[in-house]
Amino acid sequence: MTKINNDSLAVAALKDGTVIDRINPEVIFKVVDLLNIPNLKNSVTIGVNLDSKHMGKKGIIKVADMFFDEETLNRIALIAPQAKVNEIRNYNVTSKRHVSLPDDIIDIVRCNNPKCITNNEPMKTLFHVVDRNPVTLCCHYCEHKVDHNELTLK
Amino acid sequence: MSNKSLVSINDLSKEEILDLIEKASHFEQNPNRDILAGKVVATLFFEPSTRTRLSFETAVNRLGGRVIGFSDASTTSSSKGETLKDTIMMVSNYADLIVMRHHIEGAARYASEFAPVPIINAGDGANQHPSQTMLDLYSINKTQGTLYDLTITMVGDLKYGRTVHSLLMAMRHFRPRFNFVACNELQMPLEYKEFCQANGIEYHEYRDFSEEVINETDILYMTRVQRERFTDLLEYERVKNLYNLHNSMLDNSKPNLRVLHPLPRVNEISYDVDDNPKAYYIQQAKNGLYARQAIICRALGIDC
Ligand SMILES: Nc1ncnc2c1ncn2[C@@H]1O[C@H](COP(=O)(O)OP(=O)(O)O)[C@@H](O)[C@H]1O
Ligand SMILES: [Mg+2]
Ligand SMILES: [Zn+2]
Image (tube, rainbow over all chains, first blue to last red):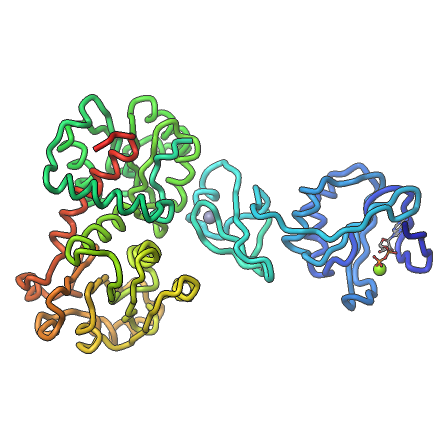
């Protein structure tokens, strides 16, 4: 367990909750969206353009009193593959892990093909991950490829 | 749900492809058999297509089954805003099998996930058209006596032509060698060239449709170059006649060479080729009947 180092806490300390660290600042609001943060009751602190020794500038999201399930966290890998998830309990970092992209992405991404059935019928989208670095997805239905830089969330 | 659906040629294993070819050859010997007596097949053509629909309906009729359906979506409830799911579920109440063509890509895959009866994809926009690929494979096997170790030259629109993409992928089992002949704008897309590399398939690209390439070819697969595919209309005017086949170009070709085309053709094969015994495109379309009879029986689990 890591003891908190108050010097490194650029934003408010949490007693309990989740810190999602090392988010590319350009995609931070996409991650906020993906985690449905505007609809949470919990208090949330969002930091952008913080100095990072790993990546120059970074973004960070701290959600008090909440621990996300693995599936939800792994969705983050779609847009912020280098993100790191820290769980805080009683001011201590009790677990740290990297997000990892699942093989199938269910109902998160929109297909960019306007002629795809998923854009023409009330249904879930499904993509298969065909490449991880950088991320490339293939629509299960119309078989169009979606590149990491053209990802749009549903 | 119904795993006997056929949505994409890539869903079939090599063994299943060979099995379908063998079954189709039985139907070629005897296309009129009463094995679909009591069965109702729905042909739902949300997008019109005369050729494919006639071929499927003939296949059912010659096997003693009955056909219901529509050939124009403007007369159906989908034009009133009904979902595809509702239409398919409704028709599933009446039919044992659904053959569908839709301009929306992925429509057949989606239908196959919830329909209580098997689905055969008769074309979903620019995506898949597996019965076309099966009849191409059947025609290649029949004219060459094998699917293995053939040199296949694809000519014309290699960028948008879904038939060439599906055929290329289906041939991966059979050690093919490909020549891709196309103008700059209609080259074989990178993803299919990468597919060849990943599968150890040799290919060569040409801008010129030369006799040199024709003369080493076993299967000459012609496709239509359509004006609406071009972003640069000057380029279209420059190339529109460069990928046309004339009879004299076949003078020194291999005796086993056959000319295939998914039809309809416009002027990419001149009419003087029709009487050449190497012209196979009309017979190829006829083979579609047998291939579809085999596909229908597989979908219904009928041993034939
Ligand atoms: N109690 C806490 N409340 C809020 N944030 C914390 C707390 N403890 C650690 N953090 C944050 O969690 C992240 C991971 O912390 P740490 O293990 O110290 O650093 P790193 O993983 O960058 O080496 C850092 O962004 C740190 O600021
Ligand atoms: Mg840090
Ligand atoms: Zn799609």
